[in-house]
Length: 247
Image 1 (cartoon, rainbow, N blue to C red):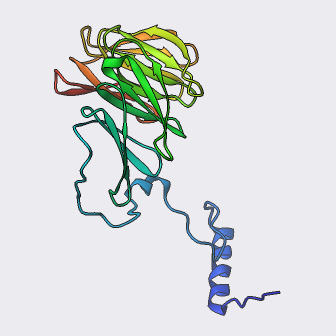
Image 2 (image 1 turned 30 degrees about the horizontal axis):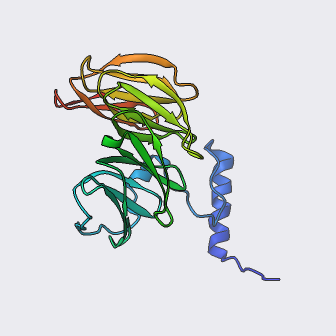
Image 3 (image 1 turned 90 degrees about the horizontal axis):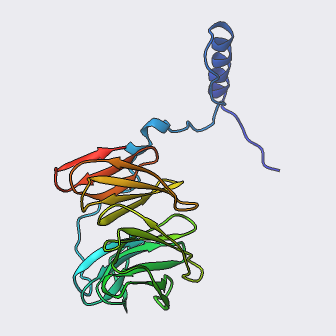
């Protein structure tokens, strides 16, 4: 059994802390010798590693969408109708895999990469570990942006003004739900899917993820394009007005 020796100076210091607590009301002090916990309000300021220099890595074509699988970055090349798998820590190209006609954007479901094929009206499912094509599934007429909500894949159809919900296990369509004109942005807030409608009306559509019901249509700035969730609010980038809307 290991034994530990405590410095007399440390004992005196601990005794002084106990005496101070007995005379002056104060929040409980940390146990003597225990490491201090970080201030949670300053976590964003911590420097986890040194800044890297900016590097540029070649892909296999003209990149559209991009997604991260936890280890690698996937860059959609449309054209030449492929996706490049790039190792995130050093930019090494690990492989280039064929897709459908004019692939657009990608989403990761925890095991597979899903990529929209605009002119084919489909999505491709690729196994993230090796890029094997596990299937191509229908997703409307002009599928473009795509998102994963933890259980389903959502694809926005910019021609049909709708979003398609897909089961990841087999690519089955679980429903097609209305959105606004030219839906071109998607985000998941933990319960709902938000769709940026760029083609008129300057709005976003809020769909309940569990069943696709439309919960609200919310006005934003001109020509909404990108949409993101920060844990509390939804942010929308408005192409036409040069603004962002916070919902």
